[in-house]
Length: 595
Image 1 (cartoon, rainbow, N blue to C red):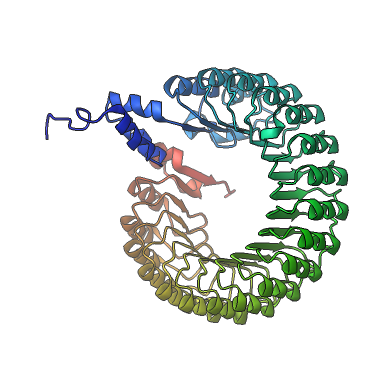
Image 2 (image 1 turned 60 degrees about the vertical axis):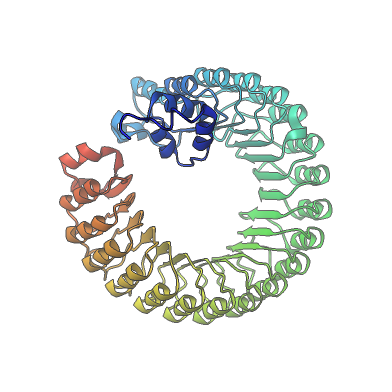
């Protein structure tokens, strides 16, 4: 009705704000704020979360944020995110190690400082979550200001910040509701800071992460054990932590539910304590060259009956006996990852299959000693399995995949990479039996061909497909996918030498929801195929097409100009015309090669 505003004239502010709270996408929130002045005012008052990258002068940006959005509860600043390209040439931003003082000053402008953080703290005293990832100019001074003003802070992420002990002590003294603290790569911290925080707000702390903090030792963990008795999650990556610190945690934090360790100097004695005292443990992850033996996992199996998630990565001293003990004691296990544990073989996984019928996800990565009969037991007993990951498992072939497909009909995700004994037969069985499969990745499985994709297209409605490096696949297989999987949103067909424009035309007709496509190293596709693709796939957001010799500047321009939602196009720099560069500099990413 022209001239009438039936919404603003009849609906109160409270009802409109209730509608705004149900908007999830940032783009939707931004859009409603442009409708009228009233909606802009209400949306700003309603905005609870802001995420900021290195996209402009940081301090001025956060000051504007504070001025506009008074009700903020969550602030995320991540200076790993790239600046917008129009601010200055990208290479000047990246290579600054030997740049001039003026360039250093330019970089500082794009880093949040204590002054900017203070403006946020004073303007948004209701902040509950603050994340300052790799904010290198933030020091204890800025952190102290946050602590003094944001007394109801519950989550604090300081990853990569060079804050000192005084800032952490101030958090402990002022933020008595703090539950989640991440101190990964906080190189300026010592035991003094963490002990002070634990003594100040330890009773509320539930999650703690520490990595690469060279001055944090067992003394800190002893303080955590004494003061943080309700701690539920602990992640440690340190060469300076030894048995005593973990033993203290096990004895003092008996509510511990998740423990992740990458500590080369921690051995069996520590996990024996965990098995004895942490009966509530649900997640255990052991990473990288640790000297744990079967004795450790036997203690976990005997004492941690609620364990549901187990990750063993590069634990060379563990054998099948470890998995046998875990299977016997931890029958509630739902997630298991074995990565590079070369002494674990078939029988260990067989025991898991027999004893853990609730298994939902299994990952066997770089496990050459695990053979078909392991997956035979999984297929026979673990009917609820939803995700299977196989990487470089040279002893597993089609027989194993057929058993899993017939026994695990709820499978939703199947990722296989460089398993050269798996071919069409196994994947055809997946297509015939696993109707709920939506995510399929078959990378560099060089026995897979078109028949596998035809079966998948008939039986599964895929949303994600990766067949990178499967050189037997041709236009026939991709045509079947295009016609049978209309809900596809991600496709990687890189390094396929036998696909051409016909496949792209079929994808354009059949997969109109496609958002991301990887075409790199496809030597037969041309500008014609790209034109057909983008004519139908108007929602495309990313397109990678490096080393496609028949794609020219015209093809790049077609992709950029035809897809209004495009965010990233990866291509050789010399293939982009000056006009395209001017129109779409912010979405272009270049592969720099010497010609």
